[in-house]
Structures are given as structure tokens and as C-alpha cells.
Image 1 (cartoon, rainbow, N blue to C red):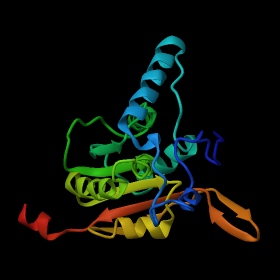
Image 2 (cartoon, rainbow, N blue to C red):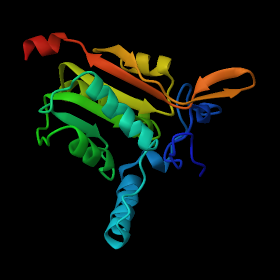
Image 3 (cartoon, helix red, strand yellow):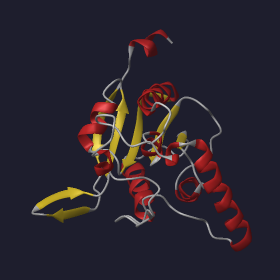
Length: 208
């Protein structure tokens, strides 16, 4: 598969893949949306690391990591903040985050920051009711992220408008991060969408 503008070698597909899909406004199902696929991918990457010391692929390229870290530094996220890397993969982002910025945390709830680079994209390709799995994703995110906590998502499958719609329940847009642009046929666009959401307080939060 071809690499995109940020160095990603095709783990996910572009939004244009929805054209011709049998399900309106959805993606063609793919093995890329299954846990079995990614277990196999990272088993191979682990063996490569053990054999050669290569860290493996960085989804969306190194710039996507540093874009998130720069945002956290700019907004003075505390050093003891609890951060969840959703779909950690080979862990390169977490290693960089800990070395450059944060302390480790093993908590499984009450996160100050949640980060997603491609996991929501992969879930969107799941062959077993991807629409329902995306809803489960949003509900799970809402449970683990504390009120006024931040959710940073990078996606090459979904546009800004689509992400705003998907996370409209319980979240509000805090900031859009700059990403590489392209020009085609006289029109300009972004190769990926990178948004920062902030969790609003809901009735469930007030009860708990």
C-alpha cells in the first residue's frame, strides 16, 4: 500500500473508500478493522524489534506524535496527568511521551487526556456492525475520560465535520490542530483531520 503524506503505510483507508459502499455513509468492511489483524501485526513488529531493534511503524508519521506533545506542552498539561493512548500499538508514542513529558500511570479510569491516532479509523472498518462499535467507542471514551478532560484524535478516514458529529454527545470541539494540506483540481484539503475535544459534564457524571 502507498504511504500517505504523514508517513503512514496504509493501515487505514481514505474517506473516498466509502464511495460505492453497500452501507450509506459507511466504509467497506475490512480485516483492518479486526483485533486478529492487529494482534498479528504487532506480533510481527515485536519479533522485528527483538531481532533487529527496529521500533516499527509510527502511525501518521513522527510529526503526528510531536503535534500532540507540542499541544500538551502549550496547554501546560500537568506532569502527573493521567494519559490513555487508545490502541497503543507498538507503544512508540507512549515511550516518547514519557521520555519527553509525562510520568507513567497505570490507572484505567479518570484520564485527563485520551489520544487516538488511527484506532477509531480501524474500528470503522470492522466487518461486524462497525456502526454499533463506533457508538460503543464513544460511550467507553466518555466513561474513562474525566469531565473537562481532553480527547485528541487524528483520522484519515473522517473529516472534521464527520468527527464533530460522531462526538457531539458529551464532547465539544476545543481546538483543531494544523495538519498537512493538499491541492487537487483547484480545491484544497487536509490529508488528515486532527481535533481536540473537551468532555462536557453530563447527567450521568452528576449522578456518579
